Image 1 (cartoon, rainbow, N blue to C red):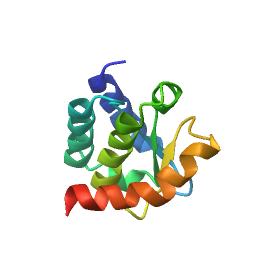
Image 2 (cartoon, rainbow, N blue to C red):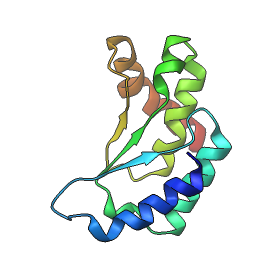
Image 3 (cartoon, rainbow, N blue to C red):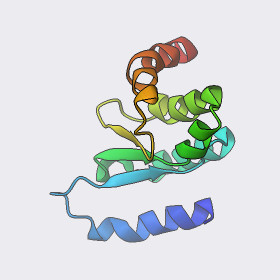
Image 4 (cartoon, one colour):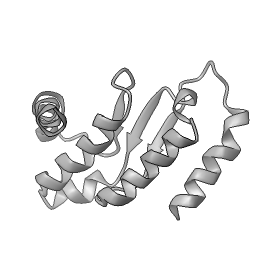
Length: 116
């Protein structure tokens, strides 16, 4: 699916979103930072954030299987430092206990080092 198609689908969906439901905005781009940055920029430009109560990042399973932790941290850090902190970021498929400490304890420190 092309990034433009995803953005168009979001645009079409907005009139139908019930504000009593917490909707999840998928974060596109995976391990490609420039693609993810483009997508996040478009999400902000189009003012979509207020319609969603949480975010979800896919493509983490293949990265975890290959134990490519640098790419995994980069994939998570980019949306986390660019999206509102008061909304959760779900990682599709990241249910393995070995990843919990990285995501909940170490990653916030890494993000602060990169941005401040």
